[in-house]
Length: 408
Image (cartoon, rainbow, N blue to C red; front, side, top):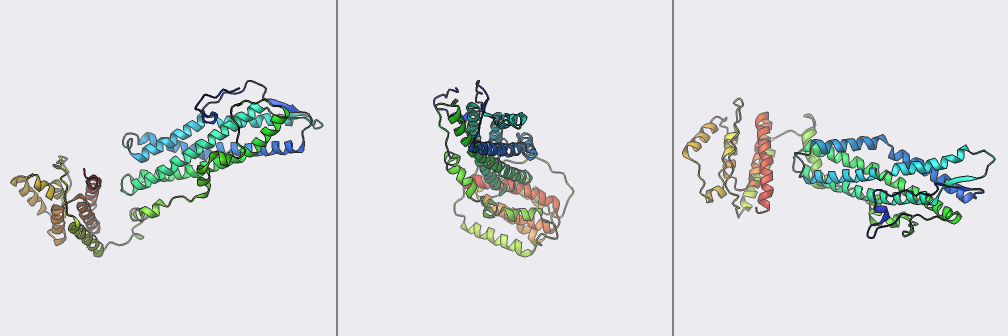
């Protein structure tokens, strides 16, 4: 008999010891109800084994491990990456349970009836300890799969939220597709396991009446597995998937990034005017400024051929109200160098207005809006290098924007 430690449910174990008693029971004259139970168990065991041996599950698991391994250093502390590691832990525990081996062993015990003569009416079925062991593993696997599906949903939502920041777009898209496929595949495995539990429980009742030999004496197997699994089980099969893409506007972002030139909307001057009006309105609404301290100078030297519009000199020293309050004034030589580099630009009114807006930005929220306007202008003028440079500056400004919003 398997002893149950206090405070630990038997279905919550990773490894359950096998029974040392006989594995099969021979029934000389089985009735029709027993034959129906045996046929249903054999059919469901084949379906569950086929689902667990699906090559798509192995392929998706390999992709999951590869994504976690290749992005461990740079994404080790990101919430989507940590949530994805919990998904991997659930899969490892499910594999250590050896559920597939137990169900396959149960199917092999039924196959001994095929070797008997045709005139023999005796039926060989698994003993009560073997059936109870498989039932216990099914209960534990169903609980674990519910936890796994919940981790997939959390990873999906966190990844979509991170995708809205326009960082690691390709990686986040891979993670979203990965957890979505895993959720769908293992939802089918959960449905197969619950379908196997019902005929196997009826078979247990038949065996316990013929030859009682209980293995888990301190545990009562539930007659309805849906009630045992509780509310999470009903939520998985009844609720709709969260529409996070539509709520967060990520679809609009992806369309801008991945549409072809023929499909993408054409850039026009109205877009710049719309963003400029939004930035001006935000500038009016700002009343209190937060001192974020002295900005760190970027000593990295950029070597590139001279282009029409050089914005890098304007991003090295940003004059906003916070730096003025702390009396951090740059030297006259640096100001002259900045003015000299700014004169290398085209001298167009639009370029000069960008320079003035960068210098007059009073918060990182306003600075992000101005940089986004400049990026659109650079793309319209086919200045790819400057647009890429401003894109990196926009990422840094967005991160500092969140810090500024928290009052740090």
